[in-house]
Structures are given as structure tokens and as C-alpha cells.
Length: 220
Ligand SMILES: C[S@@+](CC[C@H](N)C(=O)[O-])C[C@H]1O[C@@H](n2cnc3c(N)ncnc32)[C@H](O)[C@@H]1O
Image 1: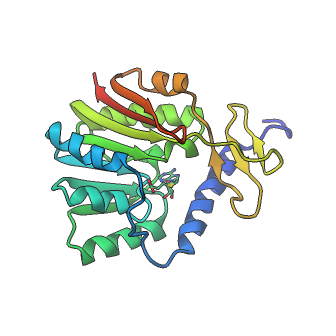
Image 2: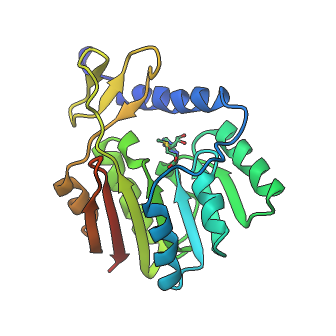
């Protein structure tokens, strides 16, 4: 590495620290259900597909995990941030919800092959470089059962003012402003998402009014 090349490992560590610090400032789980019409369709589809075990990637303090558990699914929620996981765990205990929360990096998911019937990835992938996204999608493919389902909401991001971030070679933005210092954000094109899903059959690929791509896919 020469002096002008960014140290991508250090940048990634700082991005993880950004999330830990952000969640450390939160004292209660975000319990209010966001106004996202697709989450009702999500549980309806999971039921229709006779799914039992669901993995919620980048679950934060757990609103989606707890929401899905109310429909009878067995949920595991994973997030890099220990403070977020502690909030979710506390909430699940209070609600006696069937959710296991685990602190961990999506790049090192500790699950074996075929461990889940479905994986949900809501507004999380945008925080990874393209090479990392490939690793995560390969792992998702492995930990799903044959014919298992993936639901993803992939937001349109990265429209911040230049100067508030610098850009890595693959166009990942690394924020430098005070609020988001260290956070990585990458906008995935439709084409890139479809390539990441090459080991899946894409069942639907829709765009909502905010430009988020709502994708259902099935392991081939
Ligand atoms: C934009 S929030 C979305 C949270 C939640 N999925 C939702 O829909 O509200 C991104 C979440 O991903 C988590 N996250 C970021 N990088 C991660 C990583 N490398 N491994 C696991 N979780 C990560 C963050 O801590 C944060 O909770």
C-alpha cells in the first residue's frame, strides 16, 4: 500500500465504531413501527411461503425482528452494535418475543449451511463496499435452506453534498461530517443488485416512491 491509498480496513473499523457510538447514544429501543407499507406484505409473504426460521440482518434495536415474531416466526436478529443488541434483548424479554439477538458483523455470520428458511435485509447493505456485499450475499445463499427466501429493501442513498464525504474506488462514500463521521454508504444500482443475486431466482424487483428497491428472491 502506498501513502495515497486509503486504508480500507481502518475505514471499515471506523464505520463499525460509528454504529457502536450511534447506538450508545440511544437509551430505549425504537419501538414505533415505521410507516413502511411493505412490512405487512413481508409477513404475509413469509406466511404464504411457509417460512419458520428467519434471520434479520442489521436488526438495530429490533423493531422488525419483534414485529415479525408476532406472526409466529422464529427470529434471529444480528447487528454489529452491542448496545443495539442489548436494547433488542431487553425488549424481547419484556414482550416474551421469540427472538434471539446476537451481536456480530454480517461479514462473519456464525451460522451453518441451511440454518434459515428466510433472510431479511432491511436498509443495511448500503453500509458495505461492493466486495463486502458479495461476501455477504454468498453467505446468505449458504445459510438458507434449498429454495429459501431473501427479502431485501435496498435504499437509494449517497446523495449527500460532496465534501461531506470522500469516495473509495468502488464509489462507497465515507462520511467526514460531524453527524456521520466514519459511516460508509454505497448506492447500489439495479444492475449491481441483480448481479449480487445471481445465485437466486428473482421473484420480484420493485421500486417504491423513494427509489428503494424491494426485492424478493429464492435460492436456486
Ligand atoms: C440503517 S440501520 C437499519 C436498521 C434496521 N434494519 C431497520 O430497518 O431499521 C443499519 C443497521 O445496520 C447495522 N450494521 C451496520 N454495519 C453492520 C455490520 N457490518 N454488521 C452488522 N450490522 C451492521 C447498524 O448497527 C444499524 O443498526
